[in-house]
Image (cartoon, rainbow, N blue to C red; front, side, top):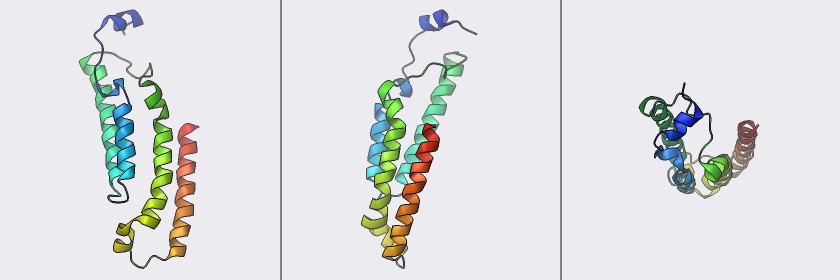
Length: 135
Protein backbone atom coordinates (compact mmCIF):
# COMPACT_ATOMS: atom_id res chain seq x y z
CA UNK A 1 0.00 0.00 0.00
CA UNK A 2 1.47 3.32 -1.09
CA UNK A 3 1.50 6.26 1.24
CA UNK A 4 0.07 9.58 0.09
CA UNK A 5 3.59 10.96 -0.30
CA UNK A 6 4.56 8.16 -2.67
CA UNK A 7 1.36 8.52 -4.65
CA UNK A 8 1.88 12.29 -4.91
CA UNK A 9 5.30 11.64 -6.47
CA UNK A 10 3.86 9.46 -9.23
CA UNK A 11 2.94 10.98 -12.60
CA UNK A 12 -0.43 12.67 -12.86
CA UNK A 13 -3.25 10.64 -14.31
CA UNK A 14 -4.46 12.22 -17.56
CA UNK A 15 -7.62 10.19 -17.91
CA UNK A 16 -11.27 10.95 -18.55
CA UNK A 17 -12.09 11.67 -14.91
CA UNK A 18 -9.71 14.63 -14.51
CA UNK A 19 -12.58 16.86 -15.55
CA UNK A 20 -16.24 15.97 -15.74
CA UNK A 21 -17.03 18.75 -18.21
CA UNK A 22 -17.21 16.45 -21.21
CA UNK A 23 -19.49 14.04 -19.33
CA UNK A 24 -21.84 16.85 -18.30
CA UNK A 25 -22.00 18.21 -21.86
CA UNK A 26 -22.57 14.70 -23.22
CA UNK A 27 -25.44 14.07 -20.82
CA UNK A 28 -27.07 17.44 -21.52
CA UNK A 29 -26.93 16.91 -25.29
CA UNK A 30 -28.16 13.33 -25.04
CA UNK A 31 -31.17 14.43 -22.99
CA UNK A 32 -31.88 17.29 -25.40
CA UNK A 33 -31.86 14.78 -28.27
CA UNK A 34 -33.92 12.22 -26.35
CA UNK A 35 -37.30 13.12 -27.93
CA UNK A 36 -35.81 12.14 -31.29
CA UNK A 37 -33.93 9.10 -29.97
CA UNK A 38 -35.25 7.97 -26.57
CA UNK A 39 -32.37 5.51 -26.16
CA UNK A 40 -29.72 8.28 -26.26
CA UNK A 41 -29.68 9.01 -22.48
CA UNK A 42 -29.39 5.33 -21.64
CA UNK A 43 -26.54 4.82 -24.09
CA UNK A 44 -24.65 7.87 -22.81
CA UNK A 45 -25.18 6.77 -19.20
CA UNK A 46 -23.84 3.29 -20.02
CA UNK A 47 -20.83 4.85 -21.77
CA UNK A 48 -20.10 7.08 -18.77
CA UNK A 49 -20.34 4.15 -16.34
CA UNK A 50 -18.04 2.14 -18.61
CA UNK A 51 -15.49 4.99 -18.68
CA UNK A 52 -15.62 5.36 -14.89
CA UNK A 53 -14.97 1.65 -14.39
CA UNK A 54 -12.28 1.67 -17.09
CA UNK A 55 -10.51 4.63 -15.46
CA UNK A 56 -10.78 2.96 -12.05
CA UNK A 57 -9.14 -0.15 -13.50
CA UNK A 58 -6.46 2.03 -15.11
CA UNK A 59 -5.68 3.66 -11.79
CA UNK A 60 -5.56 0.29 -10.04
CA UNK A 61 -3.55 -1.75 -12.52
CA UNK A 62 -1.69 0.56 -14.88
CA UNK A 63 -0.68 3.22 -12.38
CA UNK A 64 -0.74 0.70 -9.49
CA UNK A 65 -2.62 2.91 -7.10
CA UNK A 66 -4.45 0.62 -4.72
CA UNK A 67 -7.36 2.88 -3.72
CA UNK A 68 -8.33 5.03 -6.72
CA UNK A 69 -11.68 6.13 -5.27
CA UNK A 70 -10.44 7.44 -1.93
CA UNK A 71 -9.88 11.02 -3.07
CA UNK A 72 -12.73 12.67 -4.95
CA UNK A 73 -11.94 14.27 -8.25
CA UNK A 74 -13.73 16.25 -10.88
CA UNK A 75 -14.65 19.20 -8.73
CA UNK A 76 -17.79 21.14 -9.56
CA UNK A 77 -18.83 19.08 -12.58
CA UNK A 78 -18.75 15.73 -10.81
CA UNK A 79 -20.56 17.23 -7.81
CA UNK A 80 -23.26 18.71 -10.05
CA UNK A 81 -23.58 15.61 -12.27
CA UNK A 82 -26.60 14.15 -10.34
CA UNK A 83 -28.35 17.53 -10.49
CA UNK A 84 -27.76 17.77 -14.25
CA UNK A 85 -29.12 14.26 -14.81
CA UNK A 86 -32.17 14.94 -12.60
CA UNK A 87 -33.00 18.21 -14.34
CA UNK A 88 -32.53 16.60 -17.74
CA UNK A 89 -34.87 13.75 -16.78
CA UNK A 90 -37.49 16.21 -15.51
CA UNK A 91 -37.33 18.08 -18.83
CA UNK A 92 -37.14 14.94 -20.95
CA UNK A 93 -40.33 13.31 -19.64
CA UNK A 94 -42.77 16.00 -20.86
CA UNK A 95 -40.86 16.37 -24.14
CA UNK A 96 -41.19 12.67 -24.88
CA UNK A 97 -44.82 12.45 -23.73
CA UNK A 98 -46.23 15.61 -25.30
CA UNK A 99 -43.87 16.85 -28.04
CA UNK A 100 -42.38 13.72 -29.54
CA UNK A 101 -43.85 12.25 -32.69
CA UNK A 102 -42.14 8.95 -31.90
CA UNK A 103 -44.65 8.17 -29.14
CA UNK A 104 -47.65 8.79 -31.38
CA UNK A 105 -46.00 6.76 -34.14
CA UNK A 106 -45.15 3.74 -31.99
CA UNK A 107 -48.21 3.93 -29.71
CA UNK A 108 -51.00 5.65 -31.67
CA UNK A 109 -53.73 4.60 -29.21
CA UNK A 110 -52.34 6.55 -26.24
CA UNK A 111 -54.80 9.23 -25.16
CA UNK A 112 -54.04 12.59 -23.59
CA UNK A 113 -55.30 11.40 -20.20
CA UNK A 114 -52.94 8.44 -20.31
CA UNK A 115 -50.07 10.78 -21.17
CA UNK A 116 -50.88 13.00 -18.18
CA UNK A 117 -50.97 9.94 -15.93
CA UNK A 118 -47.64 8.74 -17.28
CA UNK A 119 -46.28 12.27 -16.85
CA UNK A 120 -47.21 12.41 -13.15
CA UNK A 121 -45.91 8.90 -12.49
CA UNK A 122 -42.61 9.37 -14.32
CA UNK A 123 -41.92 12.77 -12.75
CA UNK A 124 -42.53 11.28 -9.29
CA UNK A 125 -40.24 8.36 -10.15
CA UNK A 126 -37.49 10.76 -11.25
CA UNK A 127 -37.78 12.77 -8.04
CA UNK A 128 -37.78 9.65 -5.86
CA UNK A 129 -34.74 8.32 -7.69
CA UNK A 130 -32.97 11.65 -7.24
CA UNK A 131 -33.77 11.70 -3.53
CA UNK A 132 -32.46 8.16 -3.20
CA UNK A 133 -29.27 9.05 -5.10
CA UNK A 134 -28.62 12.18 -3.02
CA UNK A 135 -29.50 10.63 0.32
